[in-house]
Length: 312
Ligand SMILES: Cc1cc2nc3c(=O)[nH]c(=O)nc-3n(C[C@H](O)[C@H](O)[C@H](O)COP(=O)(O)OP(=O)(O)OC[C@H]3O[C@@H](n4cnc5c(N)ncnc54)[C@H](O)[C@@H]3O)c2cc1C
Image (cartoon, rainbow, N blue to C red):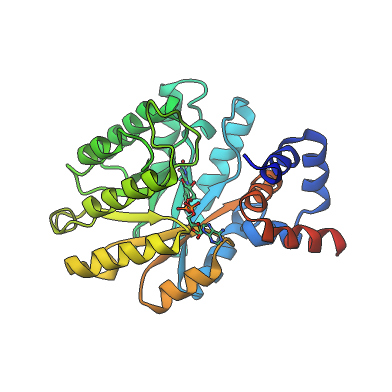
């Protein structure tokens, strides 16, 4: 890992710096660049603006690997409120959730109960695809996360799941999911997993992503109601996927691209101009500092948003 990224991780996780910045920079240019607001009402307001600009949203309450039951309760309340507001507004929103945010650290049964409670709050209107999108965390929870998805989907709840192209197991996991008309968000994978279970070279991960995308965009899968979400900021990858869909005669309304809010607005714009559907992962909550600093770690150019926030 580069020195720059190490420095940003230090800034993101240092308790005193984090507390100070979350108070001092609340509502700043930095917070607004990557996050949708500090509470559900603000987040849904941002989602409405995005909808006007041709983008849908995937709302995520900031926080992960939570053990404190008070925080889990607050997370659930915020997500329920956001699901209700977004559903009422007909915004075609996804609610994104990490299993470790809502009870997996305490065990499978409480997490399953909480996920089920959230999924029951999702209301999909005509022509919309509101779902509870389950994020995929590190490999210690892959089995549990897939079990959660399969159990809730079998109950007929509106759930979808994220798969990581880097893992060797993913083609098999995808095959099992594709036995039903499901929605899957494909990512490359954000966790440093070992070579025993994961591709580690970028070229191999990209190859695995393309191969899974081909599987997800097959005529057979789409005609059976499978719905792919391709989450990537990689313009070469979006071009390849667009070409695969065109080659197979898959309509642009049969899949979508998803990116993190504020990361590649230019790419969003060009995809929308070309008629593709674009969703933005829109985090909200007070814990914006660690999340935003990670975006600076990935792209040093984003330091300008921190500098502007400190000057103003
Ligand atoms: C909506 C969403 C949800 C996600 N959910 C999960 C999850 O649940 N679990 C998980 O493990 N991971 C998740 N991820 C993270 C994902 O796994 C990758 O780590 C991350 O997206 C980086 O891969 P990439 O395909 O975007 O681009 P990379 O492979 O990092 O980059 C490829 C190329 O894309 C271009 N590029 C990428 N980023 C930028 C940028 N900021 N500015 C300009 N050019 C850029 C550059 O040309 C770069 O060389 C999610 C990502 C997104 C977008």
